[in-house]
Amino acid sequence: MAKTYTNCPVEYTASLIGNKWKIIILRDLLTGTKRYNELTRSVVGISAKVLTENLRDLEKDGIITRKVYPVVPPKVEYSLTEKGKELKGVLDCMRAFGEKYREKE
Image 1 (cartoon, rainbow, N blue to C red):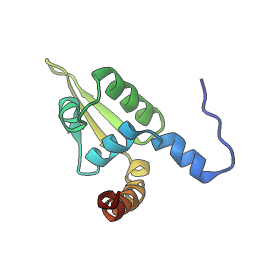
Image 2 (tube, one colour; image 1 turned 135 degrees about the vertical axis):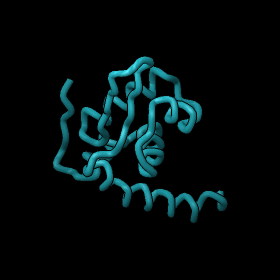
Image 3 (spheres, rainbow, N blue to C red; image 1 turned 90 degrees about the horizontal axis):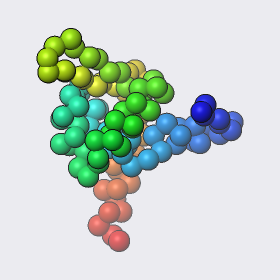
Image 4 (tube, rainbow, N blue to C red; image 1 turned 120 degrees about the vertical axis):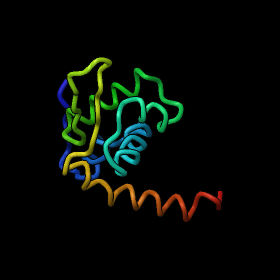
């Protein structure tokens, strides 16, 4: 099913990264390329199925790339695209907000 958007740029951005898991995956990929198993360890609490679904969505939306190496056992790496790297500012603002208000509640 194709995504539909309003003319609102905030809604568009939220549709790309609008769940907890996608944001955490992006946070971890901002530090560099990660293998699937590295993501399963760093994204605490996510099931393999949900991680795979979110990685597929991010790849489909052009936020990350997936590179498969023809070796046994399979080696798969994920990294941010240029579009994905541009989300760093959004995540930086979220981090700053969290640092400011996390302890106050």
